[in-house]
Length: 456
Image (tube, rainbow, N blue to C red; front, side, top):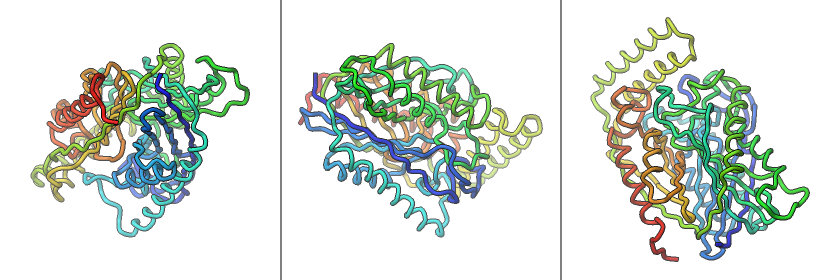
């Protein structure tokens, strides 16, 4: 088998209270009043002894990571571990109860005022410094590992958020590094669903249900040695990293029982239990050298459209929302759908009035080991596209990770544009955007597909 080594760590990066939250337009300028559960960054470094290649996944509890922040974290982490050529991937969990100052919004959303620029820069610099500080401890902790991959079914955690029978990937994928003593050093958990159990009324920092998933799964794995090896007492706590999937139109809207911390814990525990079952029932050894392929796809934007038409659409969506509120409870699925359609119409109006650049650049990455590939994109990809990438991949086992190394908003499918849902209103892209993005990803996957010759 290919000789691999790995290490991982988690660091609390919770900002101080009194600074703005990001995730919901309905919050307005509200600031955090405290912390319910910590916002965390986690690092998982995987080193291929034969090729010398390094991959470092860095996960962060934030709505999105813009390209500027991704570049800063990548440079800081690569420098801290002494591997300037390491492929560093910065992945957002997409919790909607995190810091606005960490998140530079795309053109479809209102920019922060100039008085916030200095505070934002300071908080972002502090975040990068904390992540780099955690990375500096990693080189001395590398240890030989074997890789295990698993996939299993998930029920009761998420579903299509526009219609219960709509597209959704009901699976969880895992990649686990297991030490020679049989203990899990780190596990990547990939699942697609918006972390929006906590609504806009919540003003406490929280990782939402992904945080609960990490805590529950790490606690369970800490006490288990199911994969062979010497039984070592006092082994360390494993790091569990959450990789958000193609969750553009997926959430817990139709399966949640409330919008509170207890429900976030319940759903997070459900996913952790099903992820653990997948790992224990379906784990397979992953063998092969680490291969990384990265490119930049250039996609045209949708154009701003007519301001007059956009104003009429916004007025119509607002009237529909007001009508729905007369009959349905505020925060219920029907009211939430109508409200988000209005928010989408507002974003479309802003784009029509201010205009968009003719095109945008999207960083794409693929990490492959043996028959397994992990695709990373900097968008909120609709579930139908995520499923298409998995089915059409030249790799037998492919997982899709969104919200990585940039944030360029939603990539909706044709049905979303037809139905005029929120995501189609705020998207930077037209109806062909998803098709163009999938084509670019498939091209990148083909470059590293099994059987291709690779330059060392």
